[in-house]
Amino acid sequence: MPLPRRQLKPVDEEHAAQFMRELDALRAQSPTAPIILVTTFSLGFNYLKLLYYLKKNGAIVVLMTGAQYINGAHDIQSLSGKGYFDALWVANPFVHEMPYLAKHYDFDIIHALVGTYSPYPFSELLRHAKSPVIIDYIDFRELMYDDGNHVDREAHKHAFNIIDSELEFTLWHDIFTLADGIIYKDSPLFFNHLTQKHKHTPKAIEFQSYVCKEWICDNKRNKNEFPVRAVFAGGLQQNKGQHDYKTCETTFDVAKTLVKQGFEFTIYNGCDAGQGGFEHYNQLAQEESLFHYNTAIPNDMLAQALCTHDIGWNYQHFEQGTETAFCHGNVMSSKIFNFLEAGLPIISSKYTGYVTHYLKTHSIGFGVTQEDIADFRNVVRSQDWKSIYAAVIRAQDDLSMERHFPRLAAHYEDVCKKKLFHSNN
Image (cartoon, rainbow, N blue to C red; front, side, top):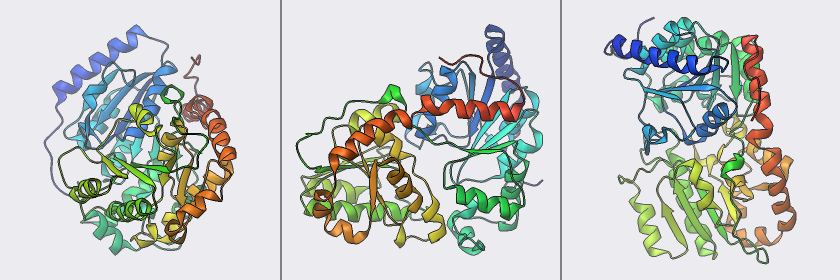
């Protein structure tokens, strides 16, 4: 299968051989431990929890990425020795070296994190891997311009700068149908839609970036007052070519609206590495004493920053965006679990219906509209915050990685047809 864009340098086979010898040494030290390859073009902060719990439950974790930085902000190498992985390969070129490693080394299972970048290396992974492969959809890129009936391929092509859209969608089909298992985070309606679209129903589970109990911190709010301090934690893109650039601009609008009503509003931008591009946010912070703007913070430290606030803000004006209503109505936000780690209830947009449904189901927050934001002070005063905060504390256990990891382990073992995790710590 030809590369969709350009030829890259060949695999560094000498380095690959040395890396595999290192893996053999790790296996010799722990012969009963499963050895798991977690691979992604670009690692997001939320997946530190996956790595941490795999290791916590006795796995040898091999991390292979195509990018050196997490969300473009923090060097992955800085995580070495902190309980996230046993071996790391930042591959260049990832599209050749990742499937090469999967072809030449016998892992117990491969967990591939597939997001909004090219599907090509992951289709190659499925063609070459000698081990079972689980595809973990960070988001369903092929559904971003799908209205539930058909895909607007021209809009999709333009948003992601795709040269060969037919090849792109063929690769997504291959990924969904050839995977040994699927993990998804968005609404089950998305998964059901894909099973019909691709005429294939794989083994699959919904698995979120649940609460990491080790990261929980006590919330510092004043329990005798209504919430007045809102905080947004997420990725804001400054590049207008990014499909989710609208989030950056509309979150800016929200900030200005809330501070005018006397709310404190703070942002932690996971995509800001401190290299500029967000001058309008910094300018607003200089002009408004109630607004605060911060660059990226690693997820294992994020709860400590969030816990000094009252509300986790997960609202974006998606109705101003380019993706379909079907897409936004069914997406999930992993950041809600970071807010729970900080003891915060969550505000979402009613337009992101699956997120709002999730909050309502667990009584940990609620959805609002743009009209609600215009009069947010009255919205706040109409809520039973004592009940909501009590539900947040319950959810820290109910929605924890510790409680849900056995489901992930069972999915692995169902795919592999063998026992992998012999004891849970």
